[in-house]
Image (cartoon, rainbow, N blue to C red; front, side):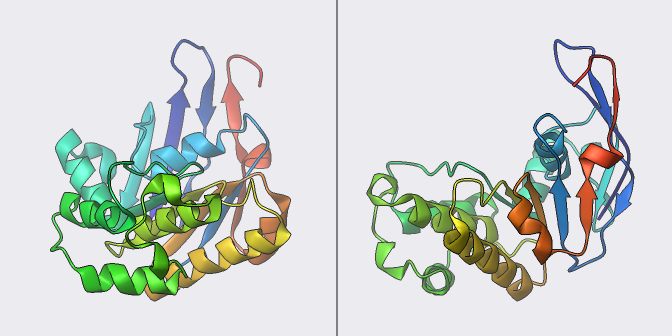
Length: 219
């Protein structure tokens, strides 16, 4: 993946962020860090196909994402990208298994309960397969979120502040699970965080406090 000439202008504001160009090779991992207002979540959303930048390109596997139609971008994201959100948004009326089966269906992948069961077992929540979201603890919900992000074997896995609400022990567990799933799928892992504890795990670090160029209003 590489991105270049990225700029984003915030709606209802004269504030524009220009991001540095960057190339991430296959299977490499990247940590995006920066303080509040540095634009790291915005960058994560741009790179994962959730937010169209004002200018610039994001190229994944030879495809320039923002040259795709809206429908094409949706399908590309479902097949090539997995996202672990800071807050897990599961469909409350569906069980854990049904939420994961829906992710397979939306990506036009054949339903495969074996893959779902194996993934839940790897994440240590096989006993929650028939549970509904409101029956899960925070940690269990987070693991289901990881399962949903990797169910279709994406080539790039994104995580937004995955450790921000966790103590040291659980922070280490979540990072380990993300890295294990990325390695299993031979995928790149890109994490956006302000959590200083995460830095020691990564060699590739993009520090937006140092690299970002802001124009217009002050941060």
